Image (cartoon, helix red, strand yellow):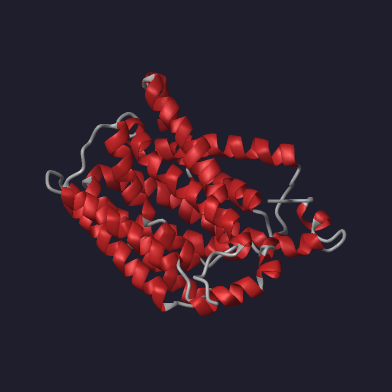
Length: 332
């Protein structure tokens, strides 16, 4: 008697965490549209990171997780600089230079770069289903971008900035993955966010002067970006990343364009065109393909489920007294 492969029970928390991440990242586009009209790219990134750092630091203190172990710091520092720092600033800047469709098309090469860098630097496999799913999703992202680019404008600077954002995003994810073998998702996210905030401190003057005259709605949107799409979503991302490959997690973010289309329809009454809906459907279909597994792989995962329930960063904590002295008793 045969059964269709289903995710092992231990995989569901990671899938739920990934789902929370993509929903909150999709919601960020609505808030960025409002706050970005008042705050400059650097000021918006700094304000978002400060709000995120405050929220994450409060949770870290309550949970008494302490500082990450020394082995986690190289990955935290690189991901904090590239993803929390460079990515957020140049993406905010790039979206002021190009239309939303062009930005979406260029930035969405990020998951492809993640898969390639993960294979090269982390030794991750590139299974055919992942590659096929990413190809379908990228085609969907391009379709969404083309459908949104009709009345926009693009500049060479804007395209280069969006390309730099994609590279920073990919590099940050690949650097974060090894750090999660030594520290918890909360520790990696908190200190990565702090590194990004420190890198953005040159924009503190802009943030103060612009906050004085900004409407309350724009400032609240900036705080929302820091607490939810940054503090919460980056933590659930790290939790899920610790339990799967960087390439598979990168492919999951192709659901974001489809969710942005849906949220814009529901929240802003922006009725999507048929081409936009088709592109969003392709994005979701590609994610489904990339997250699926062959029957043989599913059988192997089911057999290893008792061991797979423990993430790499949690292994030390399963041994008596191990990890508590090294990581301050951290726990995802």
